Image 1 (spheres, one colour):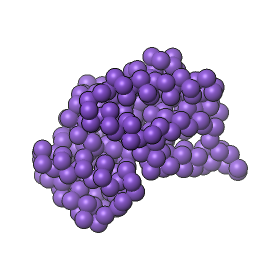
Image 2 (spheres, helix red, strand yellow):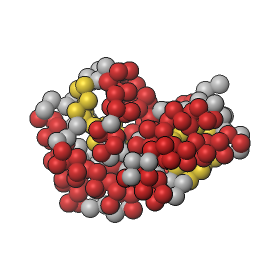
Image 3 (cartoon, one colour):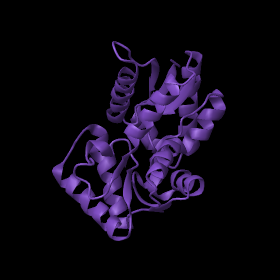
Amino acid sequence: MKLLGLIGGMSWESSALYYRMINRGVQQRLGGLHSARVLLYSVDFAEIEAQQMAGRWDDAAKLLADAGRSLKAGGAEGIVICTNTMHKAADAVETATGLPLLHIADATGDAIRETGMKRIALLGTRFTMEQDFYRGRLEERFGLDVLIPPDEDRDIVHRVIYDELCIGDIKDSSRAAYLEIIRGLQRRGAEGVILGCTEIGMLISAGVSPLPVFDTTQIHANATVEFMLTQ
């Protein structure tokens, strides 16, 4: 089993989900008392969030690259960034470490491609929904038509992530708002919806969504387990 380095803390709520999902996946594959060989470097998300809001992406990338170097020094054989938005720094982390980086958009694109879907909705932070580092990768590498909500709905999705989900505050009113936004995307022809923030799965599940969901946290964790156990 490979030793994996996880860059987490963005937020720690979803990083805890990653840790559980990866360990559960290894246990299911290997049985018995097996668990995952992982190193976790958990950043202070308040610092990252301030850099995001100020547009200081180079500073945020440097912080994550330094985290990646620490994980490599600890023996990590691959890197996982436990968040969607900070995959904006994925190239910087991969360059700094020289290690394989399991990109969350690639894992998600593979999962969508297996279903044959082409028109897919994307929910996430404003950065993830609006910037090219994520949407563009899905469109260019996987031939997907990626739909995002209108501007006022993007405000709602973004605010709920930072003000509620990242601190573990799960509100029925926010779930209802998200579901209405998903219905709007469904009316525009979306065949499924990407939960493109690692906290959204805390609020929206396949059991309540009007569209099939692609939970990026679970998808990324599954890909991590596969990488760890493949020789």
